[in-house]
Length: 259
Image (cartoon, rainbow, N blue to C red; front, top):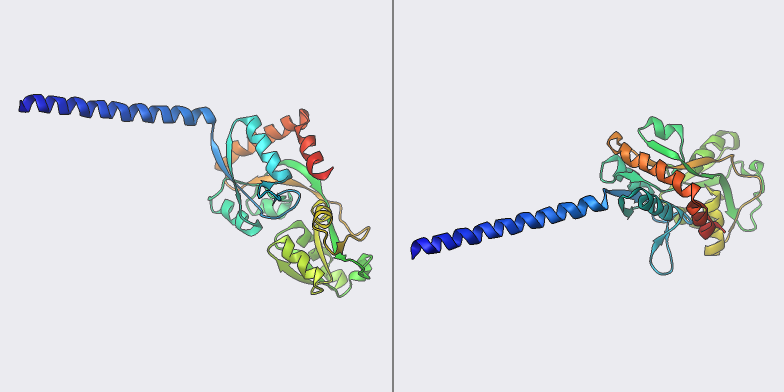
C-alpha cells in the first residue's frame, strides 16, 4: 500500500511540473507575440505636446506620435509622466528607455550623451509678457527680469541675450509656475516654445500675450535615448516616424491639436 501511495504521489508531482512548464511556455509565447516593451519618460504639462485633458487622460502631440509609432513598429510602451527634470534624470539613470517631451535637438545635449532621433517638429522660442505690458521689442527688455524653464531651448535663448540686454534670469522647473510668475508681476517676461505658449494662452485664458518679432529661428524637437543599448528603439522611432508622415497619420495628429 505504501508503494502504491508513493507511485501516486510521484505521478501527481510529475503532472504538476508539466502543468507549470506548459504555463511558462504559454507566457513566453504571449510576450514574444506582443513585441518588446519600453518605458518612455515625458513631461507633465507641455501643452499641446503632453498634458492631462478634462477627462483625466494624458494626451498631446508627443503622446499620439509615440503611440502611433509604437503601433506602426510593433512594440509596446509604458508612458511615465514625470516632469522635465525627473524625466531626463530617469533616462540618464536607466530607469526609462527613452524621452519624448518637446526636447530640442541641440549640440550641448548631444555632447552630454543624448542620442537624438530625426526631428519630428520644428519650434521657435519666443518672449511672452503680461497683457498690457510696455515690452514690445528686444530693446524694451533692458534690465528686465526674465523667467525661464530649466534646461530648455527657451532658457538658452534668454542666456544668449543676457549680456546684451542685462537680463536678470530666474529658473523654474515647469511651465505653469513660470507663467504664473509673469502674471503675478514677479518677472517681466518669460521665454517659451511658441506653439506651447499659443495653446496655453488660448485654452487656459492666461493673462499673457506674445509680442510680435520676439522669437528666434527655432530648432527641431527629437525623441532621445541616452544609452547606445537602446539604439533599436531609436531606429524604430525613425522608421515609424517616416511611415506615419508618409501615410498621413502625422498630419492628422498635428491637425487634432494645432488646427
